[in-house]
Image: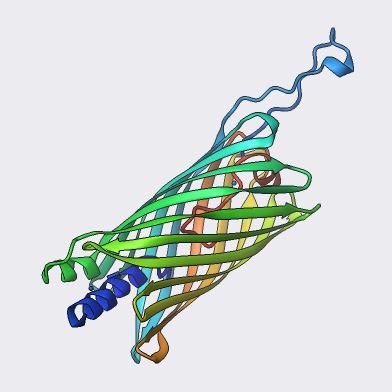
Length: 298
């Protein structure tokens, strides 16, 4: 399962426990260059329509093992991204999403948003900065609210990201720093991610990604290690992409010198994406929506 919301619930419990014992914590489609037949080559001007993006729905099913028990769970997410191209390779990408995880009688929900500002040369690289804000709610926080805690947790993150474009391969990475806040208590957060996108054709792509997130409060640390693989296929002459993948998460906690794995999950994900302003998956990545949302592995 995707552990972000569940992990933040665990952080809330850990931080509340520590505090009470000392509290929780892809493509702007640049239109083809238009040439006036009356203009000489040196006077040709590149025109853009300015916007491209996609809307996505994703569903997942998996199994979580924790404290010697194993339970089934499901997740779902809705996400939209919009990219606009400025002058001299400058781009801005906006992300918004809402999703949830359900495990037994428990549930968690997340409302997410991010903005990316970056420079891109479609033939070589992209580099920029991002910022994100996420709000979490659900069963873990409802339980803590009965003890006087808030019903929501907030997560603010900012960082840098970069990508290198090869002929049929893209290598990308990201590092972010931020804070998780709950009931007036703030915990530090660091995230690191790296991945590769491999094109069999312009409309068939395979992704591999790995990530680490650490949330720290005092002497307590909560680490989430993630590995994922996914395949994407965009149907010919249509703006629709189908995708499916596998994700593995492991959660480790440490407190007062003691540490160990407290949970792990295996999750299968399926989804579909409606795109506009691009002609293929590769075209989208090289000229439009490029980055995953700031809270997504893929």
